[in-house]
Image (cartoon, rainbow, N blue to C red; front, top):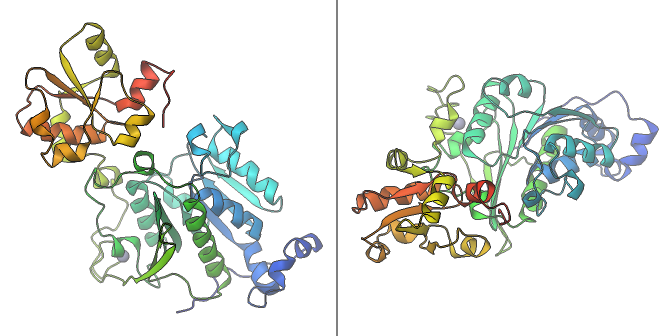
Length: 392
Ligand SMILES: [Zn+2]
């Protein structure tokens, strides 16, 4: 199915623009009309991180006239392995500012609009309304569902992408002409089931592979060329070097774009997606200690068993001194429970406190009633207790 162009052409291109975009202009399918449409286009990138980096850079180079950047975070050293729109000297700067500088350097003809704020229920509709198309580069489920619902309510198309380790996915969602994200994924995965890139890692260059698909689809939608990736999901496997296509149908019972929608306004996405499961949350209630308390316990020689529930490769990067590694999976499947000491208090930790809360629920169920976990995990330990250690 091809779709009409999303944007009307601008009146004309200047001499500078003709020179700059000549390699586009000589492609018959793009041509002068297509480039004028790009000039008139207003595209918003949600996030200037892994996917937002290549997306913004190529959208800018392609001559998209107005580029919006919504991003609240600052540039961290650990971003630079994949977020190539930022550089060494940008560390500590707002990502939105850093990304805007790069966009202007690539193409000064682009009008950059900076939204240096988190996307929330209070601003998402107002921000989206200013653009023709949204490119979603978010890395968490709460924002992803919010982006989808806002796009459905505003009848706008968006290009979605996601990345994890060596695997990527991309699609176009547009409820006016096809499925939305909820048609494909009606519900978020159970809390703690799907690790984020910060927890599970991502091959840096995977961002370029998926970001490039997103920009390609954006250009096709804006100019009305080719077959948009609407109603189809591309699944990319970098290790196999394969792209699979999966058909995605509009779900008549979709909660937001179906025949009888139950979601007709923005909802509480944080609680819809829940950072930890109810079971983990209730296990952690009253059984959570701060890194400072742990330090006091260790200094006082308190008899505890400090258990790191992350994966071996994470343990190799940084660990709290004196800890023993028992990956969460071995606790949840019960295989490690027999090895846990009965004579001293268990103290669990992970990277940020999500996985350890899940493991805490499991060990409490197994009878270790006085077990606790460390709030904020090893990241909080490094920040609050020993900044000489690395954070990943
Ligand atoms: Zn839907």
